[in-house]
Image 1 (cartoon, rainbow, N blue to C red):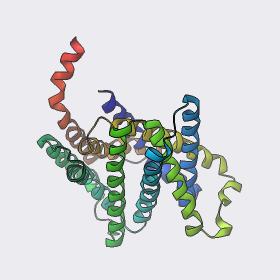
Image 2: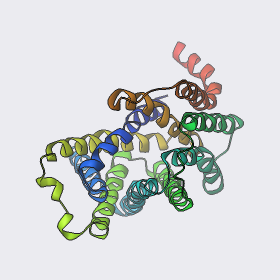
Image 3: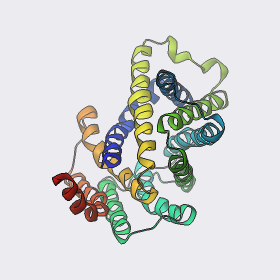
Length: 301
């Protein structure tokens, strides 16, 4: 039960990333947002590692987790926002709604994880809910095949790294150390892309502007609550939950993010939004139904 509770906490925090990220990129260039967000996250995590005197496991865990972090959330984050500049958020959301099915299939192919009928049904129901969520906003007309392809590429990066981290989690455990190396890799990715995406005289300019305090506050929030904490509990959950099942939680980001956006940005929540939320919650809950009787018996003892 604790791994599933951990994923719920992670997803609730992750659902705030769109509002926080939208605020951040208005204050800080994209590559620097990625770089500083994950550098702060890595710094916090390494301090905890030092305090707990955890072994670094540089060869067994460090190298694969660092490389994984470079691509996800590093490159994947850059690709996602780049793709959104060429396609609509509607298209990106619908594309990401197939994430559960893609990860389930890849988990079956590469990790030989079983696929239950309820996981498949739950994925389809959750996908329908995500599609319904954006239906009310359809017709923006700014779709781009290139943008869609970039978003799909980002999704492939995410699924691939998820599979690799699943192997690390099952072989070694150590979610704190895995996450520390992963955040370090993501930070390295951001700093690699800063000079590639920005002119030399544009780098770190935001640190001298009047909005630098707001910028740092947003960065610290994303670094601690939407990076260090969420990826740590996510890597913990990966040790116990199959990839196909854990990916279902991703579909909760959109419906959870809707009320958050409504509260913070003043956006209107439509009937479609409420119906979609119900679909997605049902889709995510379906695979858990067989485990409820056993959980109740265990709780009654």
